[in-house]
Length: 393
Ligand SMILES: Nc1ncnc2c1ncn2[C@@H]1O[C@H](COP(=O)(O)OP(=O)(O)O[C@H]2O[C@H](CO)[C@@H](O)[C@H](O)[C@H]2O)[C@@H](O)[C@H]1O
Image (cartoon, rainbow, N blue to C red; front, side):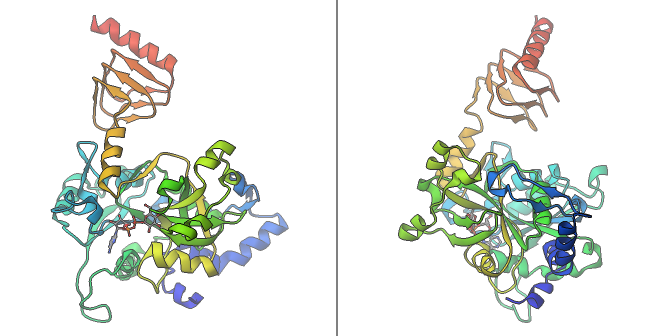
């Protein structure tokens, strides 16, 4: 891969704009100590200073949600619908997870790539999201891009992989209406997690990476389901193997205590996996996991950005079932309304009204929270508990 090939994609990649155009400038100023700040990540692997770039603006970010997989491992749930349209948590669809993360991150330019069984997904998107109209979403959109056969170079072919799917719609970014897009996030449509994507974009800019990959430690029993990485002390990916097995898997074993895990946790989670979430593009390959990232890691600054929250890949029937039930294993005889967030708390014999937020450690018992209630701690819980009991009686 040569720089000029990548320049063809610079419209999509702030990393390209910054690194090829400004990289030297930024480095020089950092060493002269004038313009750029030095920042330190919480992860010990990143104790070495990295450059702080300009502040990322979510209005200049577009997301591409990869929604086109056949979902064979989720069959028969995917017999009639695309994987991102498979229901989760009762009233949601898998695609609502990256969508909700985008909206909460302030990203309102969203493309969804589909290929198989897209009717149900189109229907859900059209009924649920209208980003252009809300005041905070002005100028935003959600656009479903279905695989199409076109005449010309790529004629008579469907998407040949995730990167190919993105590449086939690159021409869209040449439109004047998309000129302000500087960063592009590539997201999967089959995972359960909550992430502020702007943290990832900011790290991407700060480290002047060509590609950034969101990563987290995983244990040995699941490691061969993922793309695994080895990184250096600055978080740069030095090796990437897609779903390795046997000897190759063992070769990706790393000391994850270097990345902030306790000695015991490091033993339990001795591999670093790609979450399939990238700020990236690479022109001459079809699939991100098996081609783009491993190839780019050889010649370019591909950064691992560590994620420490809950994350689950929902690619198989078992993981799908477990993740759904785990949503409520902290809840007994209770009703949880739409838009509520529960973090490792216990809810017994209670009603949680819409858009309520219960933080870790909250134990709710025989309580009716109306709506928009925020419980940060057990003490705030007692306040709500008594308040609502008085009214209840
Ligand atoms: N032709 C196509 N067009 C549009 N969308 C398509 C597509 N083919 C697949 N997709 C979508 O892309 C996403 C990734 O699916 P893949 O099957 O390519 O990779 P997988 O999830 O196995 O691994 C990936 O994600 C795991 C983390 O879950 C990483 O560890 C691993 O390196 C990475 O390859 C899914 O949302 C899928 O629906």
